[in-house]
Length: 341
Image 1 (cartoon, rainbow, N blue to C red):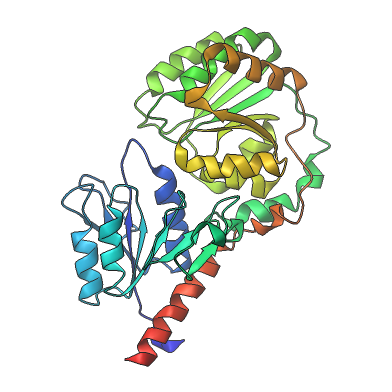
Image 2 (image 1 turned 135 degrees about the vertical axis):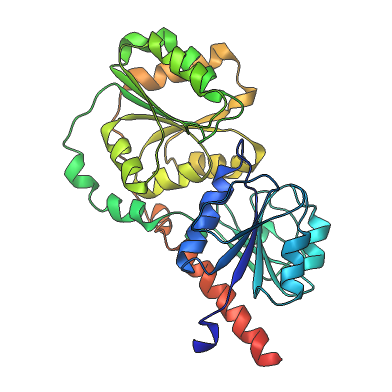
């Protein structure tokens, strides 16, 4: 293992301030496992976290600097978690050195390692590649959610009623929260309190703040730590959320919720979520009429169930050790390559 003491991995990740926060979240989870021995190749105008060594690409669609770093051995491996980079560019990069993709779309990659970390992801989805690692056991989420789930029995006796938590993405550039809040207005007599999770730089934050005044008790909140997110889940029994990384976190924690897919890349999660009866599948929010959304939300609100569900063996695959498994695989590839030189 001494050979790997100083190795560095590069990430070409979506780092937009208006979308794609989930990409950055899961790559940061990998970075933590590497003790931040990483270089983040970011979109051109991204303001970097001081803790992260980052290099801005020339455009949001470029990976030139990242690929040059791989070519010149400034990084030992390059991981792509980015929908803006053309697949042909990634396929070419994989011929230069160890290259991996975090895939949500079941794309038919040939050369890179494939990590498909979603509910419902399967190796058989990728027919032309033998280096596929798929399923929730590779989910890039904190293990704090799983560890906290082991204590759920202590909290189930705390009966919380009619407390709504909405979590539709940290930035919510499409303003889905507004759509949900408007649909909830007809059910507000059944809501004691409502909390909305939204970053302070979200473009529609002011609009959401004004809309929350229509409810008896409300809070608009930016979450910065996993511990605080877990605490909020425990304080609310009616969780409404997106089907991205946050859904994996909720399932790992054993939290029952009403989930909506916001984009095509979340569809694989929501389908498996429905198949394994892990909560309520609200469908694709951009394809639901306002009247139907009102019905879905009203039914969920008046049922007023506990936020906890009984976990099973499939759910327990979401143990928060996905980053350890992925890094172990990449380290093995690096060692194997080194022994062949």
